Length: 333
Image (cartoon, rainbow, N blue to C red):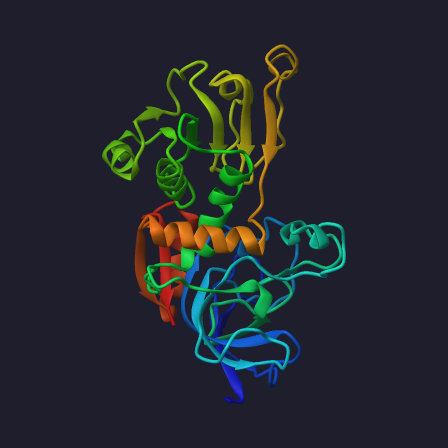
């Protein structure tokens, strides 16, 4: 077991990441496992943390929460075997005792949810330690070199589709064909839904249709009315919410899976007269994660990725921050 862990860390908001050596925490205990990181992708949530958008966090901050690697050590209560190929997402532990945890909704834990790179070292590093109950063996059909974005982005889009009943005959709109949105189109299409993609970049039309969308609509132009049953908003840009509520058919649902930059302001008429709903979704439970990974393997759903070595972490973060990433950037560790 090494005495130190090599990582890239940030010491202050919006500062550059620096290569550092962290002391090794020691052998994993209880349900924990140690994972030798092979790949870690860059999520926009990492950028929010690095830029201080979500308040102050413990620093030095080692970001990264879409991780693929192999178990190299295990605590006595961990169910995973040494050598297992696993993935880790945003959540790496829960209290196990609150109403959410005892009802299979551990991602909504209110008694001590642990996040992979908040208050602890994340995946921009050679090794991480997490609760084995939040490390998931990858099905054989998934390519470990490109699977990392599924652990957060994939779960984030699949979870609300499962909860809200996406299937054949359901019309799904996806706002934003980016890191989250391109996977949302793929999953919704594979579930049998009729998919309309919305994006201001009409150069993405061929991409959207290749992913399974029926069409790409200009998100800044005239929006169709009564067009979808479920609208998944993957962008963090603040929108004209009244206009987007009109895209929903009667009793349709608008679901936030991106984090809007401003509070929502929406009129009450669509909620009352048309019984439309607004909800949100955050990651998903361990059981949902396993179903998502199996579904992705079965239907050959993979993210569109760029690859860079960990040493180019600053370049990768800048590319995501500035919207230049081609869907997802994976750092090879």
